[in-house]
Length: 375
Image 1 (cartoon, helix red, strand yellow):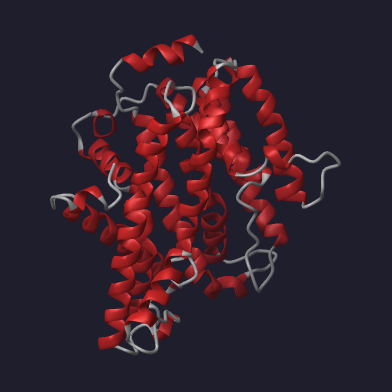
Image 2 (cartoon, rainbow, N blue to C red):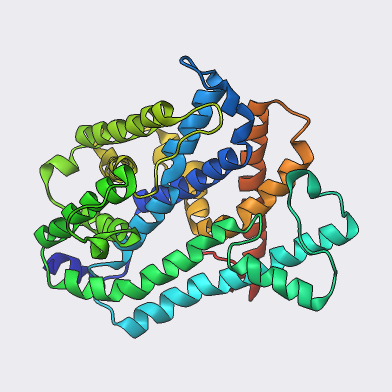
């Protein structure tokens, strides 16, 4: 632990695999939201041997449910085990999530109300309704519901309330981890994994009440632990890949067994299968350098790949807050005009591309660039 504390006095450098994980997290969120929005089209394709479209959707709906988990793990990996006081931590972290939340909630609510006013039928095809009477009380009510993640297009805003609560408890866990060794973190994670099995996979009460070990805080501690662990088994790239494959396969195959023609079964976010998958993802990105892959396109620090990863990681929070609104607008335009695979592609390119471009443009605007969710 002394090594972790000691680096605080040095200037912090960006860790590339963290940027990669953050970029993967936002891509995963978008892909998951796409199949949540349009996947119903292929539900009837379920069979003993399902169609390719069904398998593709099953993979997207299960393997890419990991986005929020990766964001939580990154919060733990970047913030826990460091020397800071509560005032400094909350004074830095809270404004960074509150300001973009307020800015985009208001801006996008106003945008949808304006579209609804001038083009009243434009949003009805995707059941994206705003307000019936265009007055200030109605708008304020709609705005409040947007912030509370109740309006269509703003459902992902639940993440803000979850991460806010997580930040509020993190100083307590940080103080503990500063004075603990990694075996004590393992102790916590063992019980957290038990809750993943019983509470979120089997949905069977465990005889011992373990609610204090349950939920998102476990992902935060897990991110801290996986970053700093020195266990040889967890720092081996082949073991990392094996964990990833086992977790991903379990998610996909388990979903197939539990699905039917009316839905694709999705495991809970903190289920044991998703926990195994995100452990594999994190460790694979951490240990990938062991493969000694030296391809200029990927390795060049000034190349387009690394710059794109950095940009996507930088804008990930702002993209998260905006992507589903743009996804819905694209969906309204193309829903009845393209086949399913093209629909998925257009929704992905449209929601990610538009959000990314908007963020990059606003990042160049003084003052506004402080509240859009760019890190």
